[in-house]
Length: 179
Image 1 (tube, rainbow, N blue to C red):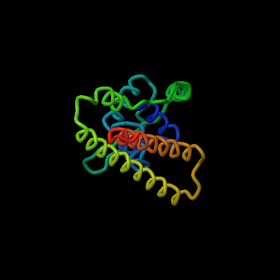
Image 2: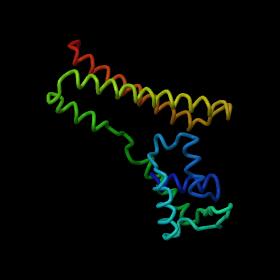
Image 3: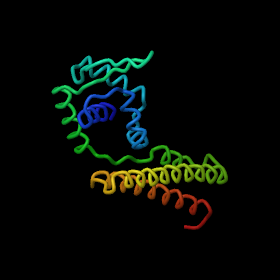
Image 4: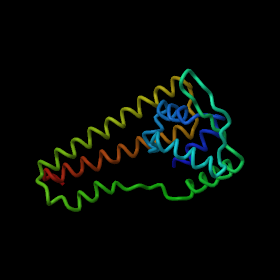
């Protein structure tokens, strides 16, 4: 995912530094769903520079700091296209394996422990959900009308959160004895 994100940002926005990519992802909350860590951006840039997918366009000095600005190459654009095709081709269904594993072995805990843990998970999912909704509203105010692909992304994230909350409620209800 990191390679796709880095190459995509360079293709869409033109030459950028790793720091600019990081800030752009944070401001658009992409880091919440893309799972791209700041260190992985710099690692990907270095590796892709060695592979000829990106080139160091220039180094800017600001006081004591230096900023390396990278540019995507033709080879990088080709790889981006391949990565995008792969992403559209491969299944994107992700099962909540930690939850399923815990359900499999839930008899090892008492109901109170499970219920307390599920409440914490519910709170975290709700926090993420609310944060995504707030981010969507900020984007909507800034752009007035969001592109269809952005709406699809947000709607799918909302659906995922709602599905997890529904599943947790079902588990809680089952534990409390109401089927």
